[in-house]
Length: 346
Image 1: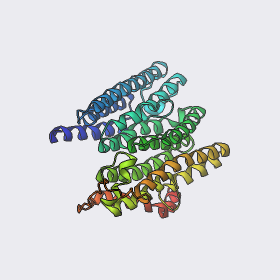
Image 2: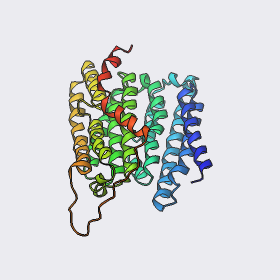
Image 3: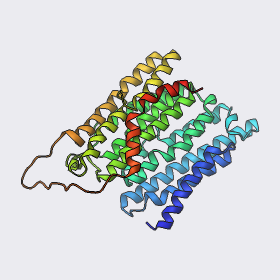
Image 4: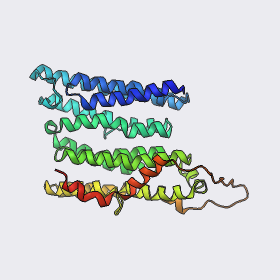
């Protein structure tokens, strides 16, 4: 891809995100989301592979439908209340339409079908953008309107997302699809607490990004796209592959790693809200995710390929791991001791 075109796309991506995050008017928020959609399309389709073109087409159609719903929701609210302010979304129909629109944009169940397919059709770096940066603006809109949304609907969608993200990830062999279902599952955790503690949703999203970025970067470094190649890739950069196991276990939410923190805080908050059965269900559903993270970790570090004559052993590379990757790896594993600072925050 032309470097100038790539720079323009990435700049537009961050511009669109910034416009949506900082706006208080629905039209400006919608404009930012549209800029984001148009900016990511060249990055998805840059390989000119039929699967990449299909992914770009699907992404455009899905996001266009979600944007139209969002615009319709804000116009309905303005028609009945005379308010274009994002925080003044009060009409019930508008709230329902907005929940649907944002769920489609994020890939929440039952509007999740597009996300694994599109992630499978793109490169790992573009997949990283789709799973982290492009989820931030819709989550911001959910946070701004959280007081008006239906808690029962959000809880049902969140539990369904956590369940489906776990179940569907169990039989996947493609690493990108596994990470897509992992994203859907984590979105369920973010959504379930949205109405009761919006700040906690934001913390969970930040920590999810911190844990997902190094996994994508590591898989991109060792050029691994499916489980069969992962078991033979450990010879390339052994230390990096060893830390990949810790990153995956952190994403699964095992103590004493970073990923345990958001799950712990969410279960604690749900218990305070007298939603103990919901907290129990979502905690049990996270075990499904733990299974496929363990399988990934097992393939990455514990299995040795059969040493037959026709087996091609991968050469160990001398290239050093990038500073950015190592920084994110450290943060994705060792942030749990900072939890008292989060408790102390007002």
